[in-house]
Image (cartoon, rainbow, N blue to C red; front, side, top):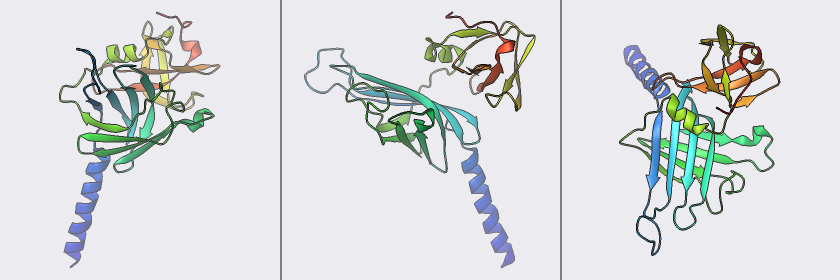
Length: 225
């Protein structure tokens, strides 16, 4: 009897380990033909969701949606989510948003369902645009490398590492160092900043994602390059 119990416990722990180690990184999306009597070559509603694993069950995401012809209104947002089993929530109220954007994520196989709990206005989307839908993992995946990331942050200023070695930190106060660093001459997008630090992201190769804070004393002044 004890052996059976131990085997059952081992099987449960094994299945939990598999769930915890699942990697949902990749691009997911949907597309539909335009509604109504649309001219040739016009496109309908579409959406693209990209997930990149940070650590554990925490992911960075980028979301782009459009309602297509005839207005082509769009919606764009990004952030981080942590999956608990197969669900996750995004809530930007921590950013002191007057009207927070709340999105619910649920994974089932190769499909991620998004259910928005906020209006288009709350999420900064165009009129009548929302994130709701079934995002299926794309059969042909885009190359999620640093060139792709640069396009996502094309409007962000660029910083250049001035020190021989610039350590990456987990927190904006640069207290907890990571085992990652950049070297003199490396160029990175400045995504956010405080008085003394900047937040950067970098994809050295597909499947790798470097992110964190760097002291401003380690960099040259930002530019728009």
